[in-house]
Image (cartoon, rainbow, N blue to C red; front, side):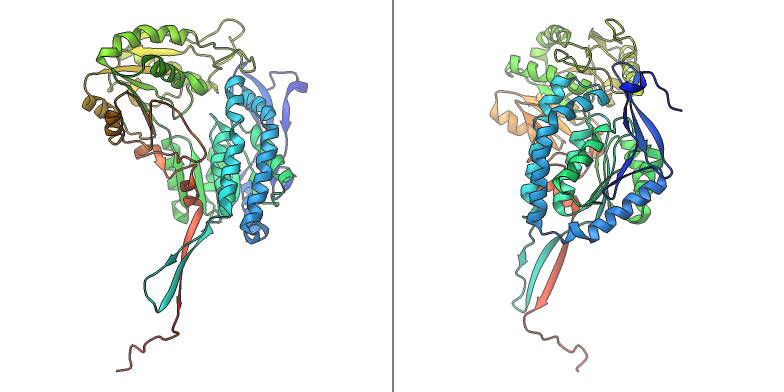
Length: 500
């Protein structure tokens, strides 16, 4: 049932789906809502897709794959993606406002991020006409070579915490590879996907290459995953959903890539540059409202530095300005939805119950006009052990754990004692230690004397329960491409096996 908590004139409406290059009414979907997490009120109403709408989108993507997009020369696809990059760069400030409304992230943070988004489009445009195979020398009697071919129709399922960035990470390599896409953005944050569709059309992307079908995961998402004419699913989210996606889609033997979160260790050794390490530790604790899988939420501090860190961290956390997302002075906005607010608060209670020492924050904020929003204080627990719930689980909120350690070996053991393996960071002035420790960390990305440095050319993805495959870098293209081997005889001779 739709609820309207704002004057109707203030509600943004996207009443149609983008399928086959046209804005169309849902066949069996409905209207969904996006809640402004800073007020708890509806700010947008959006068309949601049902199974028949997914069928229609997949058919459009298949037609486009077999038609103009697949037949287009690679350099022509690259030129279109470069036009899209230019359009995106121009529209980024307006997109940032929409995403701030949708997610609750601070506008100052989002604008900084969105200012770099066009580089991802440009990077993959630069690769679109370089997807060459290779000649393979095995025998003078044959000429053998490989070709790289697009996998086909891709179902992209993106999350609510950073919807546009995670969308680009999937759509850009898919289009560069020559695939077509059916995109199901998270039902909680679908608005910017419609703007991307408009930019795609303006850039000259052929009809059906990109289709936008928001909807509920258990309805639209499940049907997309199970669809027999979808060749690959790219998903960012949490592990339980990924397991369900595998179960639902296994009968089709389609391909899957997953980015499933993390519980990253951020290691501060005694010899670290203290001020720089603290800048990174605090910054990587509360960015994205604490709702990023790359954040260093387990801060491992060597004993000689521990008292100084625990003494300074509360003051630094207290300087984080929590407020309304569109206020340019705000550092951190609310949790993106009510369920995440409740989850974050439950983990704060778990930290108390397990005996961790609260040294900053720990409460929901209900003052200064924020009573109806989903605001939480930047929260820091000290004296945490790696066995505590707040150290084991991905909270996805502004809650961090300070864990003391003595030796290098102990730090490595704690860092790797997790089911996740997405990211890690370490601070030391000892170059030998930097190489030695980084080589032993079980994570897809290890940052040394920096943190959360993510760029279009650098592969990003996880080990263990943090996912399958990589996004960004040339490696991102692998999951959107097939390799075909062709062998041609240079002699035209084939022996008669039964001649004698």
